[in-house]
Image (tube, rainbow, N blue to C red; front, side, top):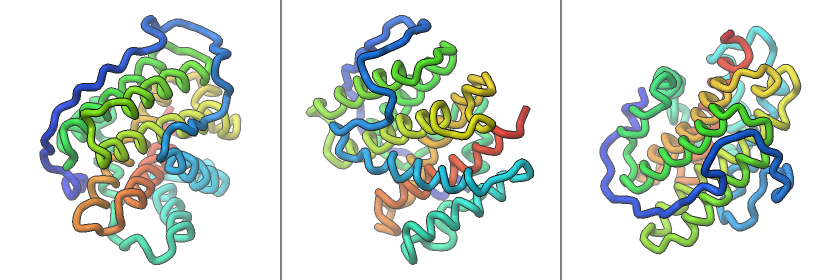
Length: 252
């Protein structure tokens, strides 16, 4: 169960993030190129690896894939990428299902119960709100979202009240949000893109699951140094992403 990485953290956030788009509306942002990268984020490799693994999982998927199939396929790719580093019972299928079961609350219950400092949980909620606002705005330009996330990341990088460990968590989550959004909006095959299906609630649910999975994996990975924060983030986000993929493709 997700309870395996849940508890109460402690801290407070003082992040003065201001959206570059105070009013969500259709736009064609040309200021940032349509690619997922942000070289100013020191943890951007997290999002890059996420998309590499997710792409391989989706290449092997077919129309009969269930959440269990996606979970098992993702586990295979993770074991290839991190040989002999991930315990067999680390981030179980039940963990993934517990995350997805909270999607109607947009994962607020999972966020509240994560064993991470409050500042991390507050910023995690901010990242989820950026995704939610983009999805609900029915905006068809990935650059718009990328600009929002990069502006947010700059505010975190420049925030002197957040310690380095918590910045690593937050910037890893934002990298996943940026790269996962790129995959599902721009890079997935036409039959698998959320944009192609014009179901924006699915975009919100799937990208949100990726980010929440990363947070759950971070909490688990940091406990007793089981796998380490970076690997924990990657395991959580890719497994949650695989599970959420079933919602994109077949839950109509």
